[in-house]
Length: 142
View 1 (tube, rainbow, N blue to C red):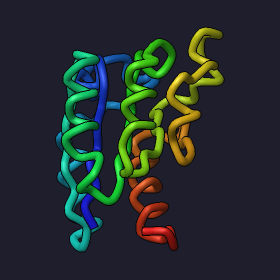
View 2: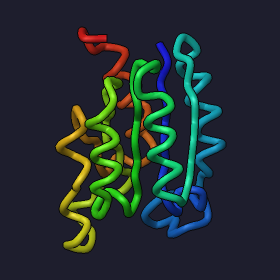
View 3: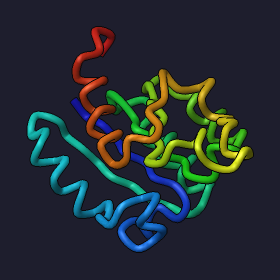
View 4: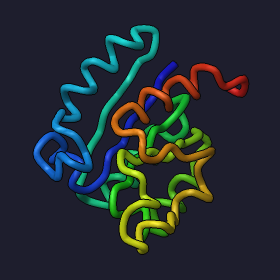
């Protein structure tokens, strides 16, 4: 199984940015542990602060990978283009958020990309990515 993780804007600052919300571990360190936890899965990681680069990555993997774990960051609430990109590919995407978006500012309560995703994990910290991998490993459709 091949799973692409795509992280959006400001997630390159994990471990430094607002540790009370996002924790103190960098995503790169977490990703190394995630690969060890799931040696049977070919995990790939991509992060960009640029909407178009995220769309290009969705297009690149969206017909050849088994799954996408997508944390679109702030684009979750604003990007029709990312939602359209997910809808335009055949690879299923699962929306992941480290923080509980419903405990934050009201504008974060609306996800534009949810309608294009198979589901959403929100508020469980970095563990949400692990749960996303488990979801796809146990999905009968894959």
